[in-house]
Amino acid sequence: MPFQRFVETGRIAVVSDGANKGKLVSIVDVIDQTRVLIDGPCSNVPRNQIRLNQLHLTKFRIKFPYTASTRVVRKAWNDSKVDEKWAESVWAKKVAAKEKRAQLTDFDRFKLRRARSRRNKIRTVAYYNLRKAASRDGTLYGKKKMAKGGDKPKPKKGAKKTTTKAPKPKK
Image (cartoon, helix red, strand yellow):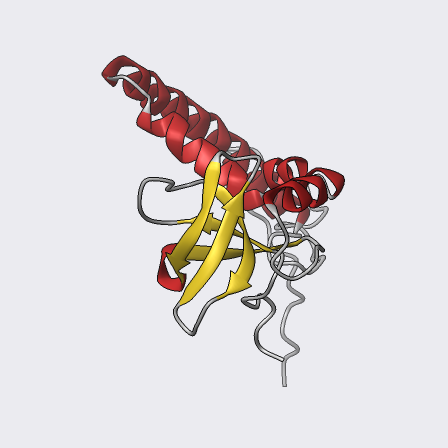
């Protein structure tokens, strides 16, 4: 089943347009294919009708009888702790971060840019150190290999190179 969020009684939604933009509401009744009756007792949204294209459905759903009163919706809302669940969701955290970024001043944006630059420089140095160590160990590409040069001692500068080739036999 490809869809997980259905337009149904008790579905929690976020208003995406209009005077109540960004507020949580509950669907109380489906009027027709394009409109629903909503109620937001804890988010100060009065009971009214709204178009479905003005709503974003969430994964949360509360249980209450068909076309329940605002009092019943409020009780179901509080019993299922919708506000706490919403605050913990990734969606709500993204909305809060977006609002916080919108409140930044020029100086705050400048400080943020400088902090990111410093963080990236520290991260780059650490990455290159790890890469250098992995190259020395021979584990850079995921396979344990012999390190370059093996266990042979390196010759000192200025020393003559000696070869240990056996002489060719004469015929």
